Amino acid sequence: MKRSDRLENLKRIIFKSGYCSINSLIGEINYSPSTLRRDLLILEKQGIIERWHGGATPIDFTRLSYSSRLNINKEEKEEIGIKAANLVKDNQVVIMDAGSTASMVANNLIDKKNLTIITTAINIAKQLSSLSNFEVILTGGILKLETNSLVGHLSELVIQHVNANIAFIACDSISPNLDVMFVSFEFAKLKKVIMDSSTVKVLIADSSKFGKINIASTG
Image: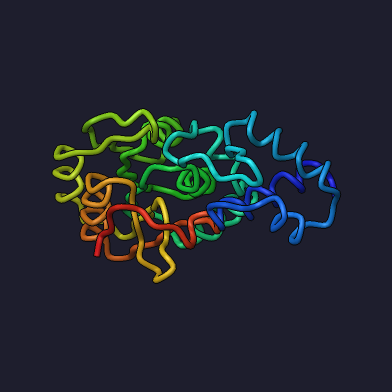
């Protein structure tokens, strides 16, 4: 197995479990303990995991840089982006949430025509604003550097006045009971406003989000 494939597999296992002992990882993979320890060291240097005596845990997702988050389950996110973008029709109003998976959706909208995009994500607004057949509206609000996005009352107020055809919503985790969860009540409130402002709601989440608990939900 190539190193890149090994690292991607390790990230998937660690982010799914939350904590993995060295012994449990050895039981799931098919290469030597010495190779495993070298790969864990690489992931630690990339700022993706923390190594502990006898095991490893994922770094708190909100502390990861945007580029680091983009590289977690990248191929999976790319596939989600393609399938999600296929749900969008020409001439629609689309709400785009912030996040690395949402960026993958945006990447695949470029062949659509006459879209109106409302987004809380600064990078997505930049990404799509160069397309002449799109009208892009950035909500305004309080800048959150860790997500490169805008939140707060102004963001909510703008979205409340939107009647969208479809909205793409990101989350921080999906609990074992399948509750959609977020790292703060502020984010959860904004996501609820997004859902209430769209006819079709699409949750975009890769497998690293499943089986984890966070403080807030939209329910």
